[in-house]
Each structure stands twice: as structure tokens, then as C-alpha cells.
Image 1 (tube, rainbow, N blue to C red):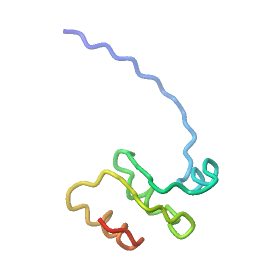
Image 2: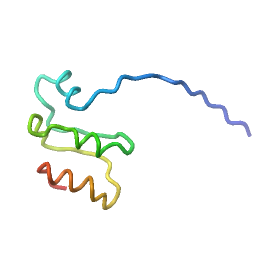
Image 3: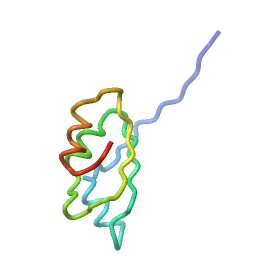
Image 4: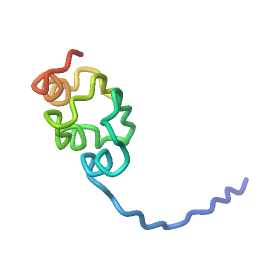
Length: 79
């Protein structure tokens, strides 16, 4: 059996979440859904919830991910 796959290297500019919100929304979104394969903590940690008090944040959380759960609680969210 032969497996054939085509991979392409694509360079993308990475933008910080607060910059994405500022550049793409007249008013901050009510809901943010993050699916970034393991970088949820870093992105949510950098989210300025004072400037962008998003009502609902959806993200992947490994069961009992204490660091992410504590971060969200410190930012005023219920799990």
C-alpha cells in the first residue's frame, strides 16, 4: 500500500488576539471560540478582558486543566 501526501509550507503572519479584535470588529464580539491545538492558554492569557469583556469563551480544555481553568476564573469567567 502506498501513501501519497502533498504538504505545502505556507508562511502566515501571526497576530495577537487583541490586534485581531481591534482590526476586525467595530465592537468586540460577545462570543469567542478558540481552537488552536494547545495554544489556548497563551492566547487567553493575552486577551485583554478589561478592554474586550467577551461574554462567552469556548476553548478546548483537557480534563482538569488547572492552569487554564484558573486563568479563566481569574479573568472573571465561570467554567
